[in-house]
Image: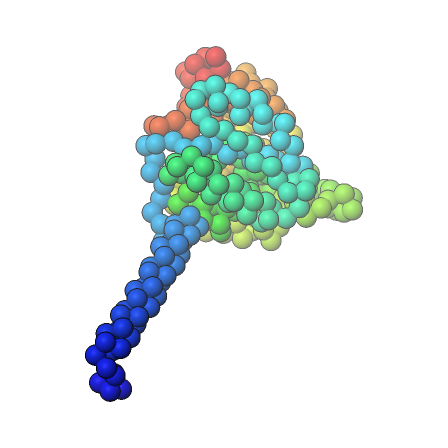
Length: 274
């Protein structure tokens, strides 16, 4: 067919075809780059975040979504030179924890794009620690999270949620139900490895915590276990005081430093409490 065309028309047609092919190749290349970038941000087939360079810190509120509970800790982190943001949870923070984990994922992606950092650190207070775990396991957090620190989180549920579900079910919304011991969400979350590879994990908890019942529910298998009373023996920090207690704030700062989180003892009490 081409041979039947005049030489000038044949050269023109071949030139147009070459331009079309080049355009298609360019579009495909852009789409592939975007796909690979999206997969990296989502954590698909991406390596773990580098540990040596801390990035921005995202603080996740507990049940009820009260952002003010974490403002003092965010200020302490900023005073230490860290970029720290409290993540606003949808609604009143009592809805599906899985939806909350997707909000955390969006906040993490926004933080790395805003700062150019390779990773984020996450501090999850109370139910916020469960939200962080859901994001790491299901939402791409394995490659974006460098450290995850949980403060008094009901990793294995709290009897208060179970009691609310039994005696006042109309006052126990979805997140409350999900935080009851043995809930479908917690059973699935705790099956197998409780601390998937990727971030370094630290669990901070208090033996006098009366909201997380029993307090040992805050222990996370595979994480660096930090009992506040193991650092400052006389500490009486309760659940609501965890984000504002100077010692706990010192533990968080130490856990999010450039060095790997290390075991702490009573010899560290004075240093961390100042």
